[in-house]
Length: 304
Length: 254
Image (cartoon, each protein chain N blue to C red):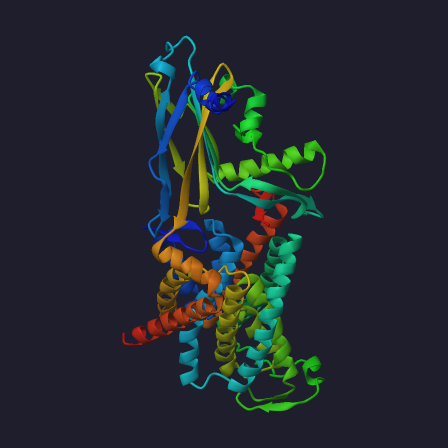
């Protein structure tokens, strides 16, 4: 079923896009990540221009995070105060990201920067997750429960001024820490079209030392607002949001996400984390190869 | 004096009568892009009118037809990747002031057998004869390399192509050619130029315009994205919120 995308200016097979959204949605429901780090590269492979891909993938992440947020919210798993501070930082970051995006576009290095960022971020987060989950699997097999890590925030975070209480997270820290974290992830959201959950969650656990119960919900809360803001930023600056493409991706991903959530309940969480780590490392490895191998296209054309 | 002037004004017509005239047409003057658009096929056809209806013997001095279809031109920047410190990055670049967004040339025989290089350059016949007007002054070698890269890229996207033998001539008088237009075609004003060529000379030329535009819902969406960006962005966000929420609510029932 062919469908013409009015902003991307290309005709695509609607079923392929819906299935692509469904596959990414399934993974995002299963692992609790937005899945933007898969959608954007896959759309580019399909022949959609990188700008349109990043702009439209952001709205898909909005859609797949909203049902997660509402579920966590009912369970009291969202720290509204922490989330609010992160959203403020994230929105500012997404605006800064848009400026950086057009600057890099002018110098022609946007593709390289995106690829290097993907390799570094996915590679480091993926290997962290892999070692952590393998350790967890080993300890559960040998029967010796691993000593629970003492929850505490990074000394750098403790040194920041203006401390305040975040009751739901069980923290007494400066709001500057989550603000800066949100800002950094906001930049990545606009640049890469990703939600940033796979960076936020480890940072919230290990840098801020938040209570595990509210980490996923608060991260999804931040993702929801910052991807919405990134969609708006793209709509106003690059004008590259294709609403038809976004609708197709959403149709697939919201359904896939629900199936993924049910599937995940049957699997042990440490195996899930290992599978996600392998997936993340594979994407990073493919990107790294792409940097070193001779690309298919030596030349690229852009209108002035 | 007045009679002489009238004669002078009539002169081109009288002279023209000794030359053949082309009467071209296209199957579609307007191509509307709607949701099901997967590309189009233009049929270009017409007649060659010889003076006093005398058609030259086929085979003896055969006339050829060359059809050039061009999309709107745009200024582009071509970047070239090079390996720097182990990774491939965009290194050199070249700007062109007028690169056609679409270019197709169809002819009744291979181009190099019917016209010489000079004529091809004048009428922009052939992918190697495009006048791209480079804006950055560099050596001819570099320009050649970048132009080849641009043409190759667009040829593989189906936006540039040459099809020798695509023009069929019937009884030396009627001609027709099919020009496929790919789905990723840009919108705008296209021109279809038809040339009648004999002995390496262009005897007659005629031009028809084709307008390609988005229509209906596609036009509405593209216009909204460009002219009502704020509202459009809000709609995109609202759509994702409603779909995400709706699916969650729907699935909780199961």
